[in-house]
Length: 250
Image (cartoon, rainbow, N blue to C red; front, top):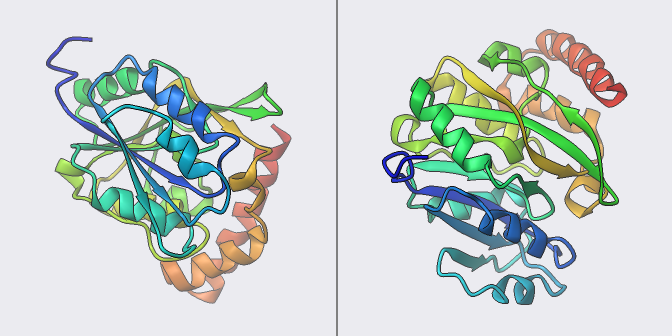
């Protein structure tokens, strides 16, 4: 990758909460990136275990740690990191997930060569350390299509805040990422997929296990966050549930 393509700073947004067991490996996957120009902004959501000590064990000026005074949810933690981000590009990685070493290099090159402002990639499920199925995504997605299924993995997203503005997640406990993607798609017509598996998503750790009451959360999201009518919410809820079942079976 040429030095010109590496010149733009990438701000990596990482929330932590009682992530002592996994956060070191997640940070290490950032340190191993072949793209050198990044900053990692970690906001801890008032952990009660050894997460802070685990993060502090890394001696790298590109890693910046912030701490919330009370537990407020992953969305609030991510927003704090976004607020402090200095990079042109905003990327997301949770403290229990992993990146391929070429993740940023490949994705930033993909964005710059094609003049894309909002992109995502494939990712692979990881259960008890064992790689599982690869979750693929459509070549591109629009606002209306995303309403039916959140097919964009948060750990794969990069958006260009120079072109789209610095955007934040709403103050809701669940579906914050989907809400942000929809906001971005109000500004740019499509998001585009780099069809490579460049990340690993843990299915058996804290942040994943807390994703419960899916149906209730999705209904609240349609009605109170997006502002859909009752009938529109019912229609999209049915299709969302079908697509969710298909994703699990795959």
